[in-house]
Length: 53
Image (tube, rainbow, N blue to C red; front, side, top):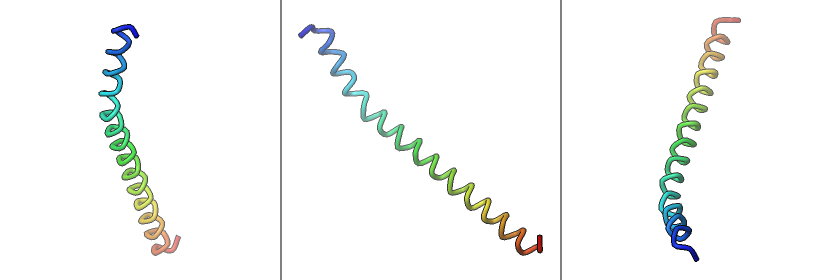
């Protein structure tokens, strides 16, 4: 095996946990944004239903 291939493989393995944490953080932010939007829509719907519209 060539030496440069072995070194790039090791570097790629070291990068993977950081990518996983970043991906999980991104999914958590998307989930929080979804539920915040759902709560806002539900609040507006209930407010309109109480106003008689």
